Image 1 (spheres, rainbow, N blue to C red):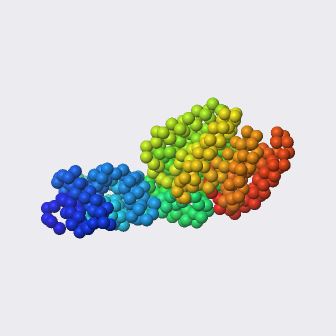
Image 2: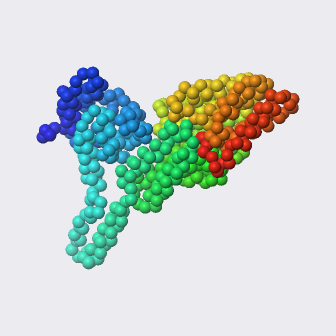
Image 3: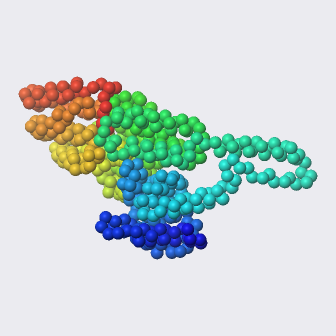
Length: 494
């Protein structure tokens, strides 16, 4: 190592060395990445000696013109998983979390630099923390000499000092460090990845329970307040996942209990986005228990939280659907318009993937259900168009983004739309996808939709037509074949 060299000088020397070692052809892309290291040096200048990890990561990223999410995406490619988010990169840059050794190895690959440079930056950041924090964990500062004639005996002063030392050791006993919290965050992130919406929820049940119980146990111990907040956020997410599982199985009381714990944990973490998402889950529970006015109110309350991403579009869509059911057509249409504006105002993607995301396809599916409930030929036609768009968007998405539960719901909305227009042929065609699918993959909400559509086919306007009778029998047969809620592996609730 060159004495007196700044950290950024080391970046330049390391990347220049890599440039010399790169050939042509397959190494061209890596060579371009190394060139970016030189660009960082030019951009920063030579006055960055003593650079901490946060500042270094910011400059490495901005020199490439990347967003935090772009860094996370590149990291996920290198790691071969989909757990890292732009929010975590932001934590590294703000130094509210220090990247652990294995994370630094992947970050070094992302930026095309030597991992030792990141290690040195981490050492600088930790050194600053140590100097700001005063005595390190377990180390007690020397006791100041008392003034002559103060009247306080030295023995008593020593006794008090011992008590303080004991308390310092007590608060220094932590059951979770940065490595534990980061690994937990990665594990929860993996559960929330895109595969969550395309795979049966019960496939993840055992791991959700294991992680949730582990988080609860950690929270019963002691850790740094920042890590406590992060553990509370993980507890909220995991309880939210449990609420979704119970909701989809039709266990609404259990779902409500998990949701209340998720909300309490989100409040303890002070996380506005999670509080808004839990309100959406509570609105879903109210909706599927027939409390439509409460469902609309909960969704509206959720919109008051200062949350980014797609959650505002989700909450407005939930409010619209509930208002349509209670006959408030004007309110429902206004909420649908709010959802569209929230979607247009979105900047970037959601911080968390999977069930915490509200993709455009799902928004169109919700709009279709709402417009069918509003009623009238014009709105029914719009509903058919929305359901078709939802199906098209889901089918054009990656396999892991194709929510089978939402595809079922959109096809059932299409079938009902054709039924309301008196088109039994169209109804039968749209039902084909659902009736040919395995009933084991149908959630409680889908079974309820099948049953409701069967009842509609009993109405006098269909005059006992053979086609209507046949469709009703097929719907009833599929609903009966769906296993009991406690035994089946469902899709995400709709």
